[in-house]
Length: 84
Image (cartoon, rainbow, N blue to C red; front, side, top):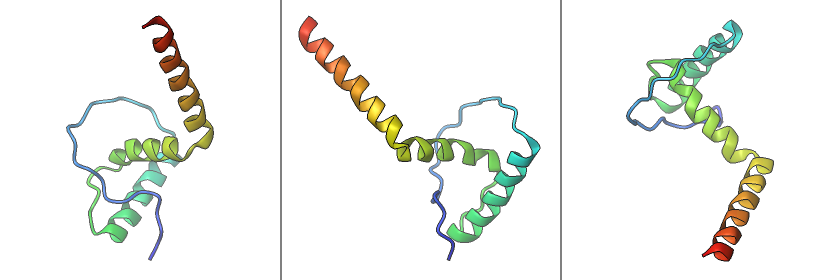
């Protein structure tokens, strides 16, 4: 069985966002949706729905981003302690 980075998609209230994708990225999204559907047994009705989970997964696994976010949050917490 294929080990994809994405699992089943959560059903949430949609938010409309308009973006332009290169045709090659759109084709890859369609292909990914097909593989994901076969792997999870959950058909992906619109490949565009993969974009948010992919971005989330990317940010979760980006160690430099996580570190920068922790540092920013720590600075904010420290600032709140000083001013509070």
